[in-house]
Structure formats: structure tokens, C-alpha cells
Image (tube, rainbow, N blue to C red; front, side, top):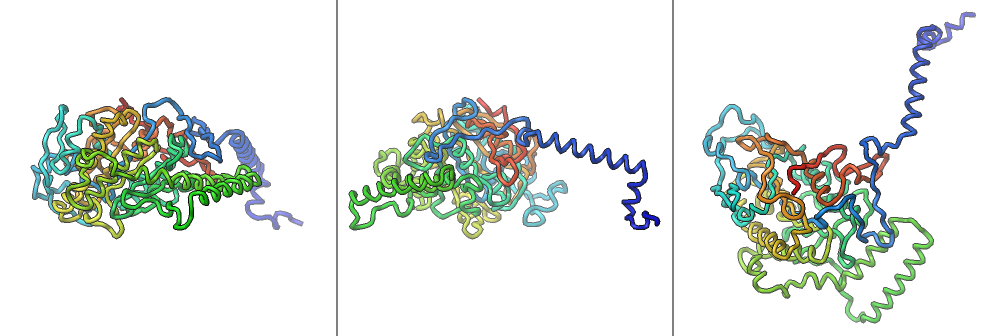
Length: 485
């Protein structure tokens, strides 16, 4: 009987000595590689092992040491949804004036909303500001006057030109939802210096949430304890007041009973991080019943502070945003680790009415947003400097500028405070502000630098999730050493 008749073509090839040796050698090599990979730690592939924060489940917000010593202990993020036009604020482009009203062949053939129109010069005049002579526009004169204290990055670029994906990418490092925000990563690593307020507070715009909503300050797959708590000067956290007819003694007895029950329950499930986080969250809520009304009592601020921030002048939106700026400073003073201050919302697209997204009528819509943002934000930075808070607090504004149409290839942000150079500009866009030209900076690089300024190595700050060591910077990012003081 001929056995070869019952074999597949592949089986018959194995009877050939040359093919048998070839396949055997390949199989043995694969087994050897598998053994080597099994012996190696996947976390070591970048050359650096993860640094796991030592988190006490009973005290998830307790302060923890950074990876290395640094000046910055807290961070204030000023985020402008909708995108500030960089060529009308901080990125001076005289060439736009030279080609005003023209449509040269070398401009992009298609932008976000289709074929571009003619080139438009800046809608506001630029002037040199401060001792450095930094050219900034009259749209934001008060922030421009602080240019000697600011560190500009003019060559940022990103991967997407859409609002929700852009917000996700800037705040979480990914265009998709479900990833931890910057503030969650920092509080997961460092905890907080304040035990009576949340470690991470998101102060939303008086008009509402940004396009990506709570994903901008969510915890993603990190423990839920590290998500941002959102409230603002107009809308305090809900359900903090004791119900009518419920005395302080009743409250104390109830809290005591809950503490005993929670402790007993936790003993039955040791190491349950979700349970511990839930208990810690409720205990923090109890402390906030007294700490939040105090922190939100802006009436105790001197009249001079209210005048400086502008809580008694301008439009109602400007006055409410000014109160949010005072609240941000008070939270930093109390030791809150991360404060994220939003200027602009996006409940239904915005288009320059609720945020900085100005496809048309930029002269009116950007002017309206600037009236709200410029004075109070500048007052906040001046006030923090005067009180010495900038010595240990990093401030950065994510302007996310995109020109007049969505353009992910060039925009400007600035930093101030602990650890960064003053009166310094890094990188540049091309002559028209279309693309990052000199020293291009990815958002990964920007976030890696912010983490570095907080004493965290972005390659070692990771969380094992679904078989991967996840990072804010994914597998990218380099610290921009030239920005460091």
C-alpha cells in the first residue's frame, strides 16, 4: 500500500529530508525564542521597569513620592475648548499680511471644511510686550503683558482635527474614549497634599462641559478614586448639605455607624481596591460637607482681588469665569494636586458662541471669548506669582490653536511657574502658521515634559491593563529639555 496517497501535500513535503530539516530548525528556533520571551519581563522592553505607586487602599489620596526630586508639586491646567487661533494671539506671522486677500498656489488644497479661501491677515494688531519684546496680539493684551513669565511652544502638532478626538488626545493621550486623563495619572502617581478636598478638581466653564465631557477628567481604567471631581463657583458639588430636621448629632452617629460597617466589610474583602476606593470616596464626601462651603466662600476675598479678577465687571459669563479663576487659586492654596480650569464649553458644537471654535465671524466670536478669558486668567497667574504659588505650581494653557479652520499641524501652548524657563519661545510654525517647522513637538512630547516637571518619568508611569503596560504617552514621547529651567 502506498502511504503517500493518504498524506496531504504538506505531509508529503515533510518526508523530504531537506524540508524536514528546514521545518524542524524553524520550530526549534521558535521554541527558543518563546523561552527567551517568557523569561523576559515585557515591562523591560523600553529599557525601564514601571514604578508602581504604593497606594494604601484605605487612603488612596495620601501623598506619595515622585520618581525624582522636582520643583513642581501641583499643576494648574487652563484648557480652551474649540481652539484659540494661534496666528491671531501668540504666533506672529507677518507673511499673512503680505499675502492678505490672495490665494497662492502653495497653500493647502483642502482644509477641514473643504477648499480654503483667501489668506487673511491677523484680525488684531501685534505689538512687542515685556522686556523680551515678545510679539503678541491685542486680542489678549493682559496675558501678552505676562510674556516675560511665560514659556511658549509654537510648534505643537497633533493627530486629529476633530473636536472630541482632539480633546481626548490632548487630555488622555488617545483619540478614543476610555483612557485615563492627565490629572488621573498624576494623582494616581502622587496622591494629594490635601486630605479634605479631592486630589483632582475639574472646574467646568459656566456654560457647561466641553465636547468630550467627563472623559477630559476621567480615570479610565485606573482606580475610580483618581477621576476628577467637577464643580465650579456657580455649581458646587451636589448633596453636601444636611437634610432639614437632621441634626449634627444624628449626622455624627450615622457616620460612626457607617465607619464601623465599612471597616467590617473591608476586613472580609482585603485588597479589594474598588471597595476601598468607594469607601474612601464616601469618607471624602463627608469631609467635603465642611471643606467645600469654606473653599467656595468667595465673599471673604478682599475687594481688591474681586476687582483684579473682574468678578464685578463685564459680561455675566466673564464674571462667572473670574469667580472660577479665584476658586482655582484657592484650591491650589489648599494643596489640591491637579486643578483643570475650562474656558469654553461645547454642548452643541459651539462654533464660537460657547467656545473658541470660530469658522466664521472670528472678529466677533474670538473677541467675545477673549473678553471672558483674558483678564481673569492673567489675574490668576499674577495672583499666584504674588503669593509664591508659582514656586511649586506648574501652570500651562492648552490653547490648542488651529488657525481659522481645523488644522492639526501647528498650534501654540504656553507654560509658567515651577521648573520652566521664563520669557522663552520654543519651536516655530512655517511662515503662514500651517505646519510645525522648527523643532516640531508632538502632544506626546508635551505631556512627557509636563510629567517630567512633576517629577514623573513618563516611560515608568504605567498601568497594566488588558495585557499591556499603558501610559499617558502610549509608546511615544520625549522630554523637551530646552524648556526646563
